[in-house]
Length: 373
Image 1 (cartoon, rainbow, N blue to C red):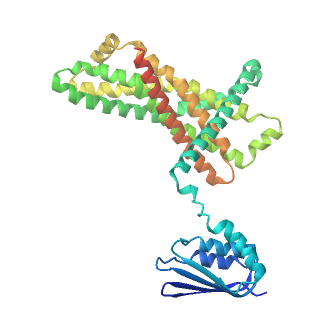
Image 2 (cartoon, helix red, strand yellow; image 1 turned 180 degrees about the vertical axis):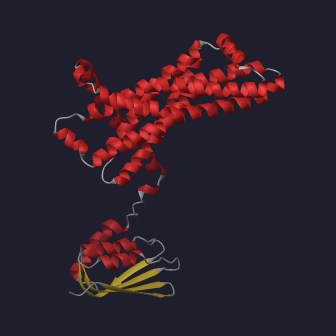
Image 3 (spheres, rainbow, N blue to C red; image 1 turned 120 degrees about the vertical axis):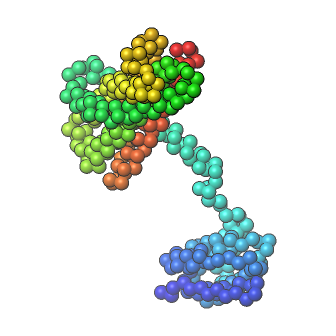
């Protein structure tokens, strides 16, 4: 079989092309790659293409020729051809009439609206899938409430220990440092106006309402959401989840509910501990920088800071726990293929959980401020 061949020569402003061999679908790919890599010059004004040595020319060969011709502007470049057989010429003229004057389709991946539409579609599709996941989890929770024997007590207590108690050191240290910094920056400003005593309200309200719940949720999102995604993702890759389904065990009841309930119950305790550590950091700075003793700080906080500020932070906590655990488990069930997918979805789960915690916290803060709470 004679392979397809092509020679290209340039004479001033004219491009001379000579084709030979079998220009059919079996052998046209090398020619297609060669023409695809050919660099177009702006000085070319005419193209002469000789087909006299072509033994066979089918639809695939003609489409390669037309695809090359479409790279030139018909108003600036003249195309002539010689040596084409009658049947080849009829087929070529048919396709040329329908395709050569049609502008090439622009790659949609290079347009802004393509990316915008694709992003919106993927977000909406992901939202629907996540809504289905949450709805099915609520259904399993309802079945567990109706049949308490289905409740996985030991698994839930294990998650309370892993996600709650073992997270206290890092959450406490982070909250302590944040309270320290907030108090230090506030003290520097208050000293200028002789309003040292107001550091109590500034630190207390900021820590109780916003900082302690938010910092705790972000730390837990990085710690627990990633762990949930990795654990469930590895189970899916190793087909443990498929094995559970085969044996009649519902994965949501065994894997999702204990994690969601465990984190929901532990988050208020974590936030309360973060409140205490953040206030301790603030009290140290108030005493060291402003000369305000611990007793004076606590007495002022007792009289001037309402209990509602503490309660707002504690009420936010279980909702943050539900969001973090749900996203972590959801991303875990999306893992597929290889271990690379585990790292990919683990990163996504941490980013998603952190973002939604911050967004929902901001929304709650604005709503509560507007209604005067």
